[in-house]
Length: 171
Image (cartoon, rainbow, N blue to C red; front, side, top):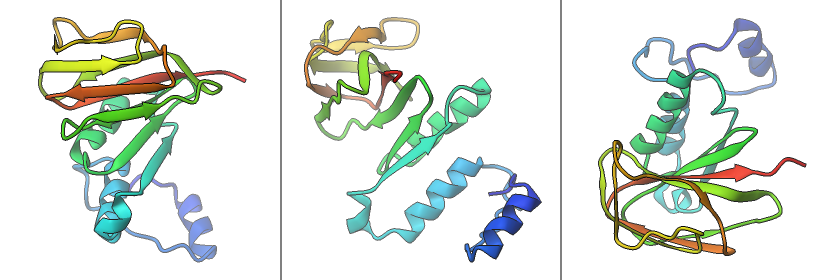
């Protein structure tokens, strides 16, 4: 990371943490640098079971939020979940049909599917109040926001990458 305060860096160095200096790279965000480091240091077999949960990734400056969402797209082969006090966001790559198992005690019911990178010519879902059936989605047209989870298992199949977002319940 390049924006860590010196006292924080010193604290972790004293704890024996390996310090990776990326201060010369001003073209990527700290989250991008972290994801790249994990990607490069993790064997392929372990990546399939890896989930990176990024707390505090949402709810601040909008340009930072978009930068964090960009990391989801850049590292689409890794499961990265952006978390805020109110919701989570993750990328659903177009590569296969997704099954999302809802933990209704902690998440939902509000959810959304948003095409990212390019329009979706065809998206089909099950388990939502307003399921999509071979539906086209694009910015400036239809996107599936303010939907409601109706089942414990949601399925999503699309010809483009989608952002999945779901609300988090307050205790």
